[in-house]
Image 1 (cartoon, rainbow, N blue to C red):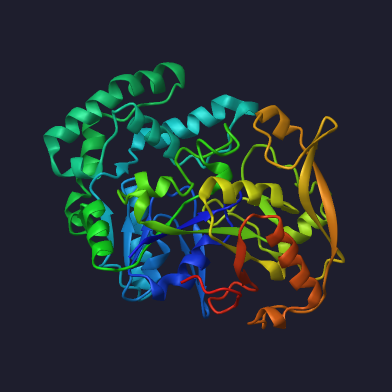
Image 2 (cartoon, rainbow, N blue to C red):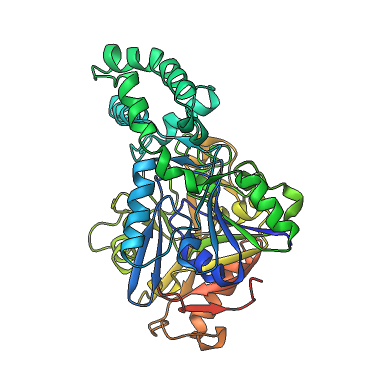
Amino acid sequence: MPAIVIVGAQWGDEGKGKATDHLGSQVDYVVKFNGGNNAGHTVVIGEEKYALHLLPSGILTAGCTPVIGNGVVVDIDVLFHEIDGLEARGIDTSSLKLSANAHVIADYNRTIDKVTERFLGSRRIGTTGRGIGPTYADKMNRIGIRIQDLFDEKILTAKVEGALELKGQLLTKIYNRRAPSVQQTVEELRGHAERLAPYVCDTGLLLNEALDRDEVVLMEAGQATLLDVDHGTYPFVTSSSAVSAGACTGTGIPPTRIDQVIAIAKAYTTRVGEGPFPTELLDGPDGKGEFLRKAGFEYGTTTGRPRRCGWMDTVITRYAARVNGVTDFVLTKLDTLTGLDELPVCVAYDVDGVRHDEMPVNQSDFHHAVPIYENLPGWTEDLSGCRSFEDLPKAAQDYVEFVEARSGARISVVGVGPEREQAVVRHPLR
């Protein structure tokens, strides 16, 4: 049975958690393959709302095995906090599997992340300060700590000593911060080993054997295409591979076993943090940007930060379709647009008088891109009860079809509310 990948088509927060949950009963494994607790998924089931950060959305589906892959960086305190929170609400988390090769966020990486961002001042990236970037840097510099290291005190101590040899100097002499001791860090990490042990395994082997048994494996990305470290709006990106190719390196599943890539896009656009955003609405507290923020409740699941809001950008979704090999789009939050008289959709950019129908390759060009809009009529009808495409008002149908025609892949599901069943299925995802 081939595997499925779910990615974000914009700058994150598109509703990947709901899409994963929508497929949950049809899959056997749900795998988080990149990122850490710097992003979150919100899933609404009935009257219950769940905010997940490290745990895959499949943790909420009975019979589905949730997996944290080797491409994830793990803050163990956050992991156990999430597990305890779900267990307290009656959710069984005992089936969770954690890759022995996943890297661990150490205390010194959180400190370095925070002080570096402050040190950058106006040049800051807009990180969450949770140690994600420094941990991935350690991984690439080959001084990282992996989950498996916590079970061998000698190896763990040697690795922490090696990491702190330089980082201790950096913190004390450059940033004027006290560096943790080797013993302090080792004791903190070793303190988690006993509780972690039942979850840890060779997840790459586990998942490939599941595919051999014709079971369905769903891999979900953290962040999104435009935040990918290679293919995003660099340097205002995350530190990992958030595109479909990252699913292979982050899980150990080869690309030949993937036959479906589902990209999630909002019916408008948002981003958190710094960086260029061509369709951003900076029209003040009474403007359309604030309307989208309030109507869509656009505040970060992890940080609580208000999200920057703007109109739908089909240049971006077309780019995401190409980079990821998208087979299906899920368009979320169509209901948020209800009540707007006119809906501009970006179809191209103007850069110094030159039209760009595709993403400019040059960072400076993208920074100076001015959106070229086509305007569609809005609607006032409530969409929350719509369950078929024909139930949607004509203007909403036209909007979906217009976006689809310019995005490079079919829109298979349309979200019309936050709850699990509030979706219009145009084409079954499986």
